[in-house]
Length: 451
Image (cartoon, rainbow, N blue to C red; front, side):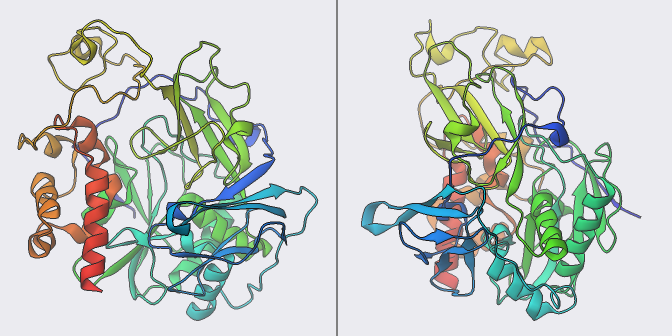
C-alpha cells in the first residue's frame, strides 16, 4: 500500500508556453556540436580538472574531481575533444566544454558486485559521476559519500511551472527503475521512497515505498515529501534524487555505461511551438533553440530550468542540471509600459486580489523577467505561509538566517529545507527578497561553522 499525501498550500503558476502533447518517445533528437559540464550545478562540489584542452575523452571519462573527496567525479557525457576549460575570477572553474564525436567510445564500468554490496555500489556511483547527481538534506549539497544515509527519497514527478514529468513507463523503463532501487537499497538501512502523482500512470516500483502526492507546486519537490513522511533531524542525513537519475543508475547496472541522453521540455511564451526534444545532458543552447523562438524582435531571457529555480543563460550558453527543461520568456527591459509595475492591465499576473487578472480564472499569462517594484525591508505579512506546505515558519527562519543565529536556525528547521523550497515564497514576496539566495548562504554558513 502506498502513502497518500495531500498538500493544501502551494501555488500553480498559470503560464503560457506549455507543451501541448508531451510525447518523449517521439521527440526529435538534437545532437549538439558541444556540451558542457558546469561545477556550480553541483553544490558542495569543489572542482579540480582531470583533463586539459585538446585531450580526447570517452563518454563517461572523468573531467573533474572533487578536491575534498577525490573519488567523486563529474564525467563527460559524450566522447569527443576537450574544447575549453573555462575559468572565471580567481581561476575558478566555470565549465568544461567538449566537442562531440558521435563515433567515439564510451567507458564501460564493472557493475558485477554493485547491486548487492554497499561499498561496490558507492564506488560505482562515484566513478560513473552519478553520485554527484544526488543531493542530501541537510545543506542541499551533493551527498557526502561518508555519511550514514537514513532514507532515500526519489522525486517521481516535476510540478514546477511548465515542467513535464515522465509518463512513459514501459516494461524496460520499470525494469531499469527497479534495478536502480536495488542498488540504492544497499546504501541505506532505511527505505527508498518514490513520489508520484496518482494520475501519472507510474506503477509500483519493486523494492520502493510509493508515495502518492496531490496538491499544487511544490508537490514535486523532495522537501514536502520528506516533511510529511520522515522529517530530517539534526545529525541525520537523507539522500534525494530525481526519477531520471534513478533511471540512469538502473541503466548503468543494466548496460554498463552511463546514459547521457535526456528529454527536455522546450517551453515558454517566446517559443514558437513548445515541445519535447531529446538531446545530450549539458547540450549547447544555441543548437537546442535553433529556429525555435518567436520571430518578434525583443530581448529574451533564456532559462535553463523553470522560471522559479532555473538559471539564466546566454544564447550561447549550455543546458544546466537537472537537464530537463528550458524556458524562454521576455526580458522586459525593452518595454515601455504605461504606469509600469502599477499598471492594472489584465495581462498582469499577480496573486494579489487587487489586480484584475484574478477575475480571469485560468488565463495563461506571459510574464517577463522584470522585478516589478523595488526591494524594501522585510514585511512580516504571512505571505510565505500561504504557499509553504512544510511545518516550518518560513519568515522567522529567513530572519534567523539573515542574523546568522545558528541556534534559532536549528530550532526553526534549517536542516529540512533547500533553496527550492522557498522559490514560491520568493515569487509572492512583496519585499522582493532573494530568498533562495539567502537560504543557500545560510546553509553554506551553517555547514562551515558546524563542520
